[in-house]
Length: 530
Image (cartoon, rainbow, N blue to C red; front, side):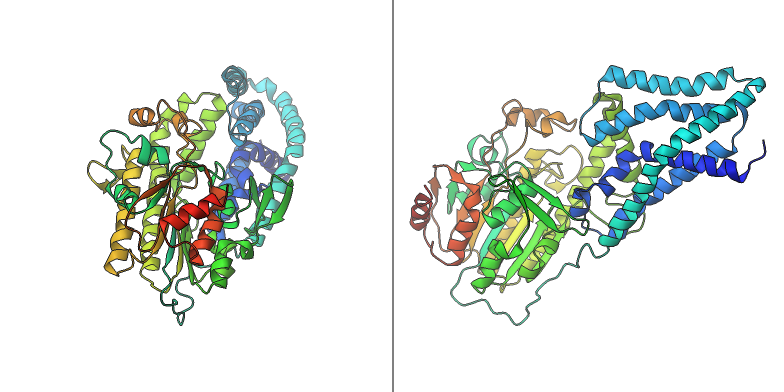
């Protein structure tokens, strides 16, 4: 067979159609109109868009060469197999993008059809079938040309969104206002979110043998809220609610990372207004504002109301062709997740889960170390009067071994991360005490939501027996931890009445304005919310 330009063009068009189906699971987050993946990307735009585009084009080129340059039985088998696998790939893509698994029997039957479509023509081919084979190839290429239009749309979408996101993430900045002086006599207000901090696990039903000495010592000189009503279940909705005091149940982003929020009371979407947050309130009261935060793009969505900022999520890197966890994450884990979901069996993913779990834990560890260093830098700046620290612990995956007292990504759990959160709290206390600021600072320590044992983590293969016991058999207690230590406070108290976490902005406003200076005033203020 002599390869002609027409054959090559036909193969390229068909291969583009197949690539758009086979790799939809990888490209969909890039071109999704919600732009959720772009919104949470803390690296450079190049490191976000380049790897999937390069992989898509490489897969397209390889498939083109296989479909154009093979002859005889292999050529027929490749074309038939590609067509035969398309229904299974479509179902598997749907399953992954919907975060669910298809029926195992249906998935197995469709995969079997695809494999048979390759094996049978390969085994039964004879030279006399050459003419019929080419007829089939022409028919298949015509059908796949329709799918190729979606491939063109995917690539155009990547280019267009990549251009819009070219200035996605501004550089982190520290101590922008060098000449700023904290007003004498005003305590610093430090707001700490320990992600997924559960009141029940820390103060009510602690796992036997789990020691949290710094949480205990803070409780002895602070006010502990025992029944906090969370602002939501997901961090991306909860934190905007906490910062604004409004209910947010959905968020979405533009391609350049600008945030819009949805208000369930009115059913309307509106652009997130950084001027309508607690940080603008702090600026109005002449506080210097500083953030070191996880998951949400604080330096992007709050840039004009911050004097210092650092954020990260997923260990993002600026290295070309190496996404947030490197090539192992990009090549091994997504394909393993795709095939396990596409087959409809969660158990199949157990073969790759140790790899995937380790990668996720390493990303989590990178985030923690970066944020720990940024938090130290901000806490060491005494002019930063209003500080917000959002740390990625005790949120799984586990990155600490409480028995050995060292950071690790092996054999770690939520309970280990609780111990690490306790150690972090101890470091904050020690750092502030050395500079004489602990007693004179007002500190709010809270979880954005509680430990989502039943909703998420009990369904993963990383779930441990001690976590099952600690959660009371995979149950979810929705109360996040919430502790307020006022400047000069040295005795503990409790507020047992329900407290809506959406009132956090009001609380911080009162603390910044020094309308609350004692635990009695705090209790009286809370009563005004009833």
